[in-house]
Amino acid sequence: MIGRFAPTPSGALHMGSLVAAMASYLAVPADGRWLLRIDDIDTPRNVAGSAERIIRQLDALGFQWHGEIVWQSRRLERYRSALDQLRRQDLIYACECSRKTLSGVADSGPQGIVYPGFCADKGLPEHGNALRVRVPDEDICFDDQCRGHICENLHDSTGDFIVRRRDGVYAYHLATVVDDADAGVTQVLRGADLLDSCGRQIHLQRCLNLPTPAYAHIPVIRNAHGQKLSKQNMARELDESEPLPLLLEAWRLLGQKALVEAPVSVAEFWSAARRFFDLAGC
Image 1 (cartoon, rainbow, N blue to C red):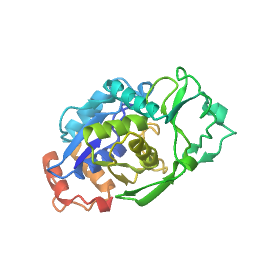
Image 2 (image 1 turned 60 degrees about the vertical axis):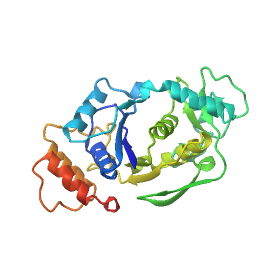
Image 3 (image 1 turned 180 degrees about the vertical axis):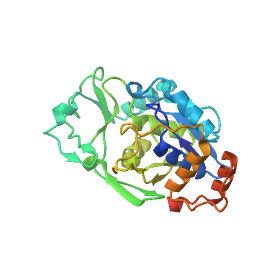
């Protein structure tokens, strides 16, 4: 099994991201591999120094990743190649529609605006426009290890979606499926806030003839107001100078049973956590 953790460097780790990292780490057995990737492709969101801080936090908390850290910002040629593959299959087209243009004229679904295909047959130039991938009017189904059997019809839920933005930045979904496939990732374990990404990512995997990993989406951690812990909601940064209490709190928030003997070191925690971790408890 090969798992991964792929934080966005828009700020330091908070408890929600630690819980997701811990779950993905412990779900990989001792003979597997756990990879670290920095998802820094969305340059406007990146905060200077955050990637280095995240790496230091993970190291202080006792995470051990295999191989070199992958940086999305250094893989642009690979994403360009994937886009060329979609282009050769006539699966992408240029779109000039802005969110403002679509507001009020397009239907809205649980994931936001459902793109109605206004530009699908216009033959617009790619330069200066976003690129969308065509989606089928059919169910895409998969079995989530935490959520069970899930089906989604992208035609109804999102419509043709963006794979390269107007500003030239490659979209999250395209970069993610290419990176996971190139790294041989066999399990993607992440927060349930990313569950609605699966349909789009599986569609791209099929278009690009890439394997589909096993998916598992754990509940997101929320604050006292019921909001998801996130950088946007001003979640407090972790102080990695006291790692053991943070690890024990993340273990509790994962829904795991209290460890029989309280660990006195980070190494003892990870040794016990590996023995007793139960994904079904998440």
